Amino acid sequence: MGRSLKTAKQAGAVMESRTVDYLRWALNDDRIERRHLSGAKDRGDIAGVRYQGHRVVVECKNTAAMNVSHYLREAETERGNDDALIGVVVQKRPRIGIETREGQGRQLVMMTLESFALMLNDGLPLGGEER
Image (cartoon, rainbow, N blue to C red; front, top):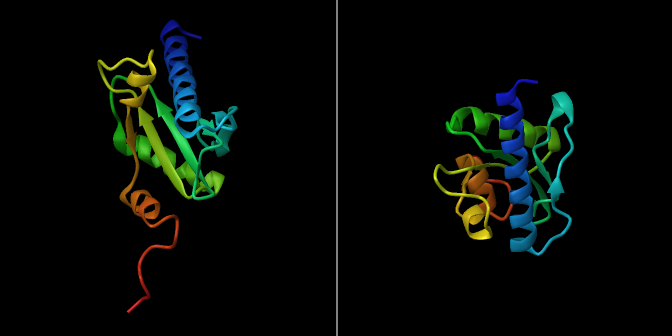
């Protein structure tokens, strides 16, 4: 494995661990944990996150470039693989460290508008009756 690939994997693993630590603390839930790699049917980086009883897929990114479209597609695919209600991406922000809880809490969370609407609608189906 090349040095840069190993460094990228290490950076990703640190981001995942810090995100787990933060969510466990913030939600007071020790069931949240890093997910083991699952191959072609990836279900996100973090397991045990719930919203209104529904699973939430969390994909973590610690990259210099923010490839938002690609990362959201990845989270949506993983959401489907996990039969989760919502898929989100936690993206490391440039020049904002993740060494402290405060720094980790300042990282970005990205989701589709549909996921945001589902969250605001408490996980209930969206829209009224068809007209």
